[in-house]
Image (cartoon, rainbow, N blue to C red; front, side):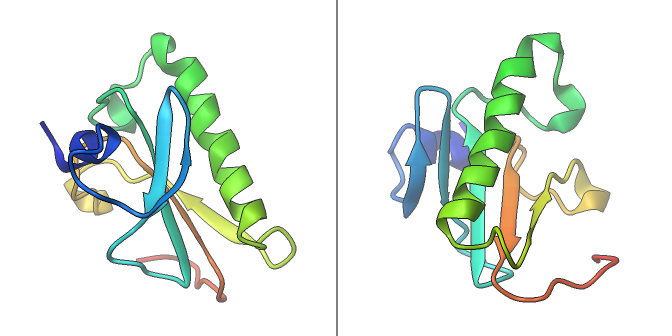
Length: 112
């Protein structure tokens, strides 16, 4: 079982921001911006490269949750970034689908 599965099952503590039947959101312990929240499905999905049509609903919920987290954090006016990494070259270190919500400072482009 991966670390994100353990967080979703509350076997490992995390600073939760949002939770429902399908997902959980929590502050990243290695924050890259003043606001850095991870949104994960409770169901283990290795990454965006493994999603199928059966995941459409949970994927939509992840993005709606990202918008809500940004709004609640006061990032709607200044802006925020939503990132999904897949695989080693993209920087994915935990192989459980997750969405990064980043903001609270100017973010450079291109990332990386």
